[in-house]
Image (cartoon, rainbow, N blue to C red; front, side):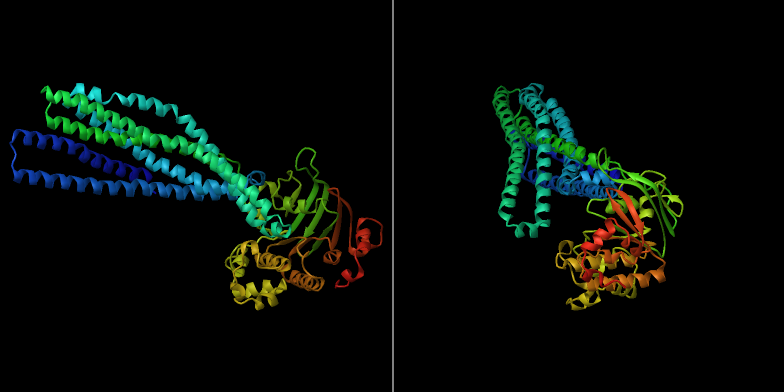
Length: 567
């Protein structure tokens, strides 16, 4: 987009519009002086009236042109900034993404970016227009009467000083209001997402009071800003009115003394009227630029954040996963993983079991570079994953987390997120493998059924199976299941595991299954028993069942009915 060209064209249109407006008082002076002298006739008055009408039409057309060019450019810049913000957000490091509330991103997109657009559009217009009109009007007024010009402009320096003093106040108050809006937006998002929990615990009223307090805080801060912003218009009109009063008093005296003509006084009134807009524009410009400056600084904090290194070379499609002497900590004193050594080929299944908080999910995050693993610890076909682009590493995995996320879209489009080019036959196959066919057949619109926010219209088991079908559609070399079947009944779990074993023989897909149900990992080629971030035991189901340890303890605590579906 040629933003400089559009801006230059808009500025030229502003110059044309301003020149016409600046010529009007001069024409008025000429006509009034001739009327006073009685040297103009009705026909010539009609001609001059038509000329003034034509000049007004030209000014109108020029104004339409600059509004189209400059405001259009500003809207396109806003569009570009929103795209860059989303692109940046999607590529942020996981640490930065975790540390930034969703409300911040929403406030930036909905409020800060428009503030930047207004500063770029109206700020530029007000700046250029006010300087051009002020300079030319002052020159024309001075050429008519230097003395009267000096009298008329007495209030202007005072107004300029007041505006400059208010700049820091505007910046601070606008920034504080935007931060409060972030908190309010994040609270709104959180309340809507947790509406079921709030109702289940009868905490809707308490949450409403919390929202009310944040809403009051935003109201107070935005009104704190508005109090400063609202003073500019009346203040400018006050000084403009005082300039007009000074002009009429001293200018009238000069007319009575015969030092200037009535036409000259009329021209001065016209030019002073034109100068009212630059005064308003200057105040408006200062407000917009300070708001835009505060907003662009807030945007920069996100746009300048560290992103994932996609400039690294892509990773070839792998057949083998190796973990060698992997030790990882989230931070100083934060327990992670210790001394992991694992090998998994496509076609094999690895099960991971252990107490809550033992590090089972952490390993899946490290495999996908959702956390930063140490170098020379995780390899795909002998390639250190930390030396390759995150997107190519993640393409090696189809992942289903503990809390599957579904978009507010159709079931079909949710599945196609993993593989947009997939055909109907492939969709149906993935659905069958996830034992979801019967459920979808009962929906009024089948695959085209629209889900609510985060799949709220589905049961917990249906969400998990939909997410599993999406992962299976991806057809990646490795399938990662993080307690994926926890909300599924035992019979359905048995069917799904049977489907996965059968499919694995055809696809040669490696599978890592994390589960609290031992029935889900009993048929794995190897089972890792994890505790406190370390692998404390490993082997097959039969081997682990015969020796004392965490696995046998877990087995004894699960009823035999839960183990019956093993096949």
